[in-house]
Length: 334
Image 1 (cartoon, helix red, strand yellow):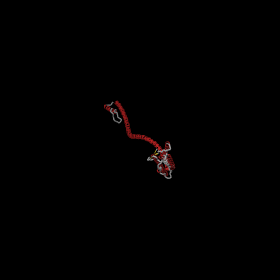
Image 2 (tube, one colour):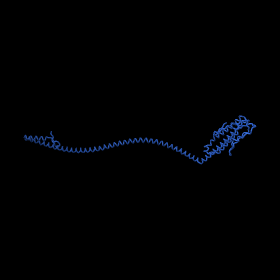
Image 3 (cartoon, helix red, strand yellow):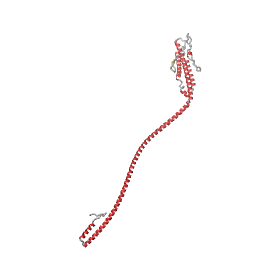
Image 4 (cartoon, one colour):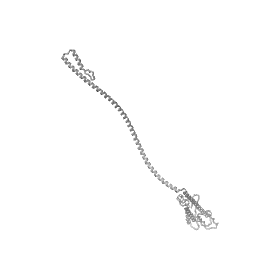
């Protein structure tokens, strides 16, 4: 079975040695169990506790107690795995005494830490290079496991120090108060977002109303322009009517003056006609009187027997009396 470390810079394999007194199937079963235990230990070391990171520091979990319990658990599992690993058992041969390989390779644990109990292999006398190689591999495996345990302890110490630093930093920086402030700010932000949406809706409605008012204003401006044009037209017509009225007044005054003059001329003409009629009447009366006188004179002349000279005088008088007279007194030839 081949294992690789967390930093991928080292690897080792476990090849259980078969004791001389057991069967191959039992040895394989024991080796498989030990391999599974070591695999679980290495998986714990590689993956780590998923609750030992930021989540544990934010929840203020007592890391020290879990670190100790986890360390004890992993050390006990490693010890059980090493103890359960099959060890090569051979019949002693007349060879030199075995060397304490595990004691020479595995470094001692620091004081105050649980000690890893390393079971030394039984004293054997290698009879061939195969036994020596198996013993060397077992010593390397134990040394690698001890190194992994030391590395795990160092990692746990660093994690504990980081957790303590995180707790102290949390207390110094007032993370809880700041988180409360952040929570309140988030609430305010949500309220502000709701208010912003309401304002946006009102703004949309007001924009629609403004657009409608703008259209109405354009229509009203057009109507106002038409009304102004009509007013200007009416003003021009009123000015024309006023000028026509003024001209009519002037013509009326002039006509009245002409009427007055015509009335005066008519009155004067009527007076002249009345005077002419009066003179005509007088002339007619004078003519009739003259005719009457002439007839009377003729009657007397007939009775007297007038002479030729008297007859000529009568004829001349008769011609004068028979001449018509105009209203203005002028004689008119018949």
